[in-house]
Image 1 (tube, rainbow, N blue to C red):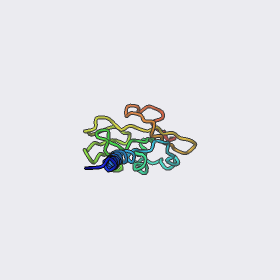
Image 2 (tube, rainbow, N blue to C red):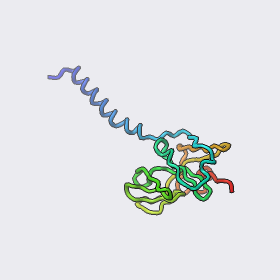
Image 3 (cartoon, rainbow, N blue to C red):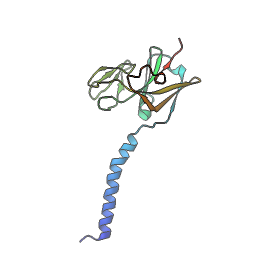
Image 4 (tube, rainbow, N blue to C red):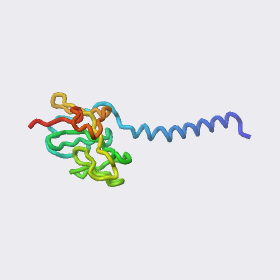
Length: 149
């Protein structure tokens, strides 16, 4: 027969194992949500996709048509990581494609990519992943920074 002490020790170990198994990946997978200084606006003058912030902060910095945006790096279909091919963002899991402005051009995703708040402070760009705009908020002033003509 198992003693009460042995039983409680086993329950504690199993509980710790279950909690550790469930909680740790969730915590490790959460992207930080504090504002991120992404550098000088001069770094983003040319059209293109910068993936420097994808791993830690889950956004691409995209310059297109003299506009800088911070687009989500997660597909709107099944939340899978997107890849850049230099001219568009694609979901390697299911084939969705997104233009440089975040608009979806090929499914199975049904909507475009959300954007994070991006602001210019002096000549420093700052992205705040805790403030997100839907793909439909293309005109929202804090969802992009316009480059000077």
